[in-house]
Length: 226
Image (cartoon, rainbow, N blue to C red):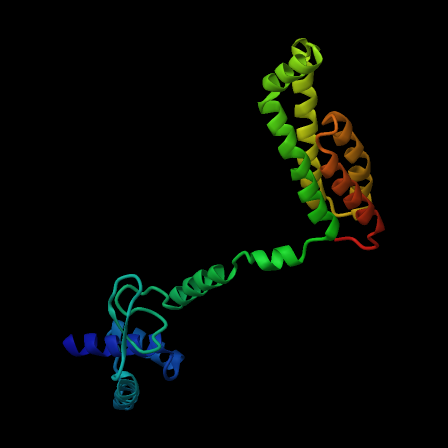
């Protein structure tokens, strides 16, 4: 019984390593399990393969990635838990490939179109003054009232609404320049919205207006899709 168990262990190791005639090894395995006669030539064959494999792999051993059992070098399956050892290699490769997929800011910037860059800077050049004006609207009204004796505080809600609309339009221009794939359509949107920003911002976004207007012109001159 002990001898049969040793033979089964040897055959299992050989099968895991993919050594020898696998069909013959499977036949011998079934014969041992069913208590059939094993010929001396078969025993010699198993012994030869086992010794050859042992000599080639005795210098190094691996551990199963799941149960940490000892494995012979290049074993495809664990002889203890039977788990496929190639799965670990697959998972390692996936992790390595994910590490390679990294965002390169330099590459992204180098791929930007001229009208996209102008739209970003123009949108910010308009948006920042608008937000500053909205945050200090009450103070601005006080200054106008002091120097020009004009009370605009009653219209504060209207000014806030116009400022918010102008800020939203700036953000819209920046986003649309990256989302849309047809430069000519982007150019038309930027061209007309630049005048909207100029009017709604009450001239505070004049620099941004000029840049977004230029971005629209550049986009209209593009001859290819992104």
